[in-house]
Length: 194
Image 1 (cartoon, rainbow, N blue to C red):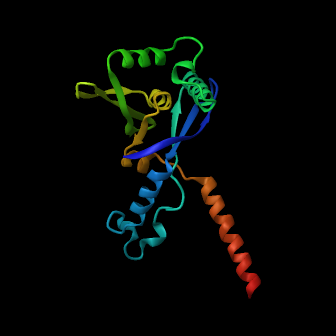
Image 2: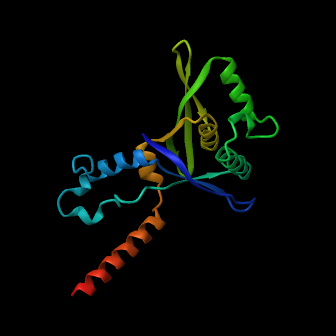
Image 3: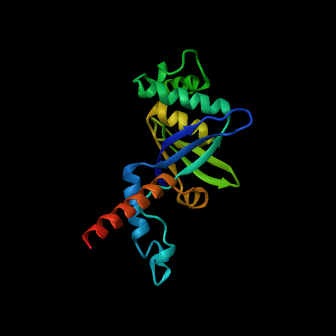
């Protein structure tokens, strides 16, 4: 599993879907980059196949389609938490998330982490891993959009299984463009030395 964070949110309308873009946290990316460079863990590094190796210098991006309402809630949550609001101050009126927060508080239960564990076509599957004070541990199915919101409100980790990232990631075009520009600048500078 790879720890992820929200890179960006694109809010659509009724005819255009909204998208949440997840990327590995900095510490998770360092581990992922090391794994990508290990010929034992990444067989594509062996032999003459090195030209087909994954781009180890850019973070993979995982796009998850969410509903318009869910995107609005997530946007509000991100904006207000960045402004320093506490979890109970994010929404002006009680929401299902407030109910969840209160239930957790009053039942001595906490969400340890969320994980997006599978993807089929364009549908992602997530679950919350929950712990009670008595040591009991269980999981519940959640929508990925709700996992994103609650991970922000509760300041808990959001993980994605490796196979989900490898099957559903999109290229990090911004990182690739930056790498191309850096390479062009290096080539230009080296041509001046000639």
